[in-house]
Length: 212
Image (cartoon, rainbow, N blue to C red; front, side, top):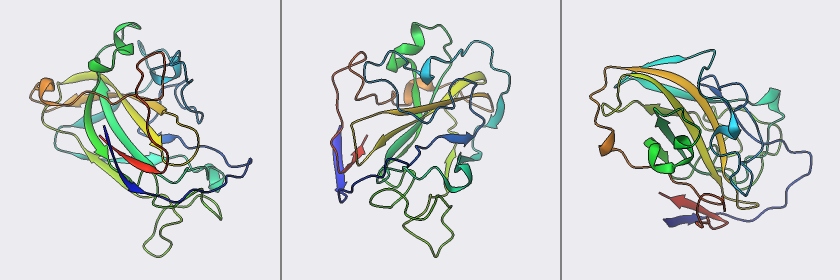
């Protein structure tokens, strides 16, 4: 991987709470604020059971979907200077197969600005950007379902590599059901995984947006 765009270092308050997604609806056990363990023992999805999720979000190829974050009424302010993130999917549920990054395919990459353009944590509480409060706000992010997806049930993952702080990998997962796809998954790139010693030896660089 390469890196792009330096951001300024900052000291973090101990009370700041980390981020997680709430749209699409996370799988129980996956909606966790903390990063994955450095060993990678709970990759993917914090070890959540992916075999029989209680809720699936329907998505059609070509449609634009929102990526929503749980702001916890403003309490989740630890955005770590933003960073880069990806939306990836897998059709595997076998516990061994889902641990292999090549079984995950990326449908959207955000280079910087995920989830914010702030240079550190949010100062006055977590709020969505409204055009006048940038950059100390959470960006309104969306992603479009590519035609390459296969139809049927899948697991969707949001993975985030923060700019400032410890070298970590954050991950939440949701159950989805695709329609209208053309089954060309091999045309999509594989998920980027870093900072998990049990998976690979790749590490991101602090104060830079990871360029996938």
